[in-house]
Length: 133
Ligand SMILES: [Zn+2]
Image 1: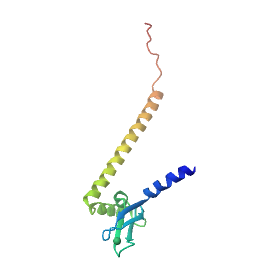
Image 2: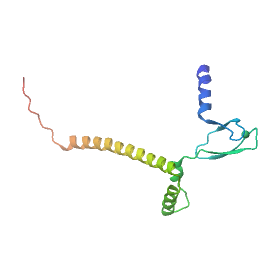
Image 3: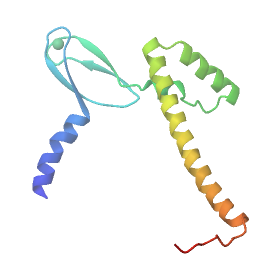
Image 4: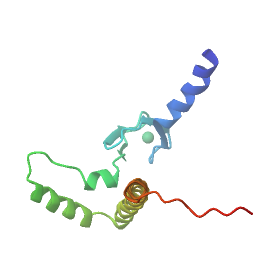
């Protein structure tokens, strides 16, 4: 168990932190990754401040604001999408595409299963013609 813990911890540490160099003095800095948040990071060696953006474009666009009406939310989503930089738009569109493909194949499998179930029940069982060879 101790072996596992020893090898797992550094990996976990690596995956949940981002290392970068200070743009002013080059000091290596390590910050915790906070998905969906923007962090203001102050360098430990110089007065430089860096904004770390961990926001996910896809989640940002479809963020639901409770307290607003359905229509207002849809209008806001629409605005957020069009105000995004191009690469974020592509990112969102790719996600929608992947999601659509996933749902499509899932529906296909479900319809196939449904079809199989109903067709075997509704059709009367017939004895096939059997020939001895
Ligand atoms: Zn610095």
